[in-house]
Image (cartoon, rainbow, N blue to C red; front, side, top):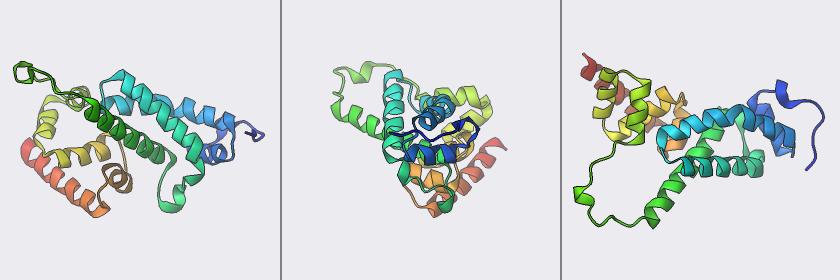
Length: 186
């Protein structure tokens, strides 16, 4: 790995990813320093298990180091942080699938109290009671789109990639979710 001359601290995230693609370890460290706190918070919104969050974070940055040259960037309308979040979200889904695959159903599942989802707990801290209640009444696919676009700040394209649905579907769901929220809050 060779380092490129010059300090990476003055570069934006897209340029840092481009330098990482050329093997610049300092650019990778700067990218990690800037984005890992933000990425950790986003992952925690979706998963309350700290071990899984730590594993996903590690897998994400390993994937960034290995595949930085695959980043298309602004040429395709994407951003470096959106690309990073897409990698992390896919790694998180993979972790959930692994956990579900290896999980055994509890012996007395019927008698156990229901535990609130991590997303619902995160919503309580982000939005007020009335808005949070309205969000929880949405169909899951509508709520996912709103969370990705409004709470996480993703674009339609990034939301499409994250959820694995066409951009048109994202737009339709976002519209339906806004209408349902408007009705619930009126």
